[in-house]
Amino acid sequence: MTRSRTTRRQWWAIASLLVGLWIVLAPFNRPLPGGEAFSFEATPEIGCRTPVVGMFGDDQPLTEVYTTPIPAEGDPIEQRRVDCTGRARFRVTLGGLLTLTSLALATRTRRPTPDQSDDQRADRPGA
Image (cartoon, rainbow, N blue to C red; front, side, top):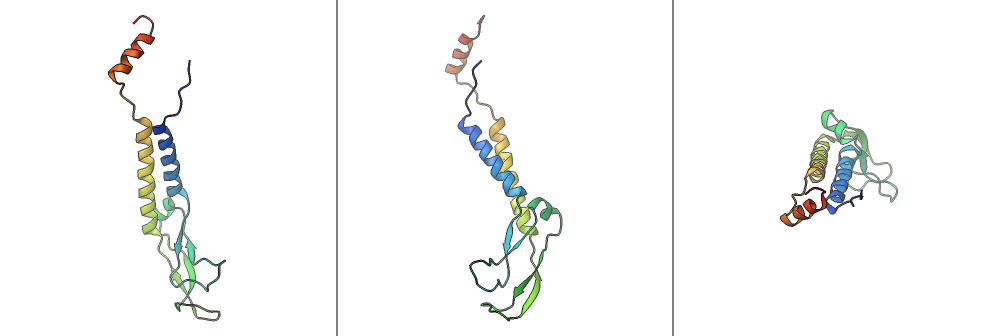
């Protein structure tokens, strides 16, 4: 019995499945309104929960942001909630479509051409 090689379609199915699951399951970041004091270490973003949880729940993390456009040390800070629900729904939709695409690619069978079916009949004993 010979082992069949993985086809290009199967590689695409595996890749789209992995990317789709990563989009659906991995937590993501949203940019902060107002930002933070500028530095290369500080990134003005807030962490949202995983999209599956954020889509069904009310994912609104609370954070402190500066109220001035170009903040400096000592500028006023206020607390704000950032809504992650809309982006979570988008990510679940996109990841779900990629996952469904991978399932369609993996389960779709090739129909043999007339030449291939004749070759397969000749290989079988008793044909």
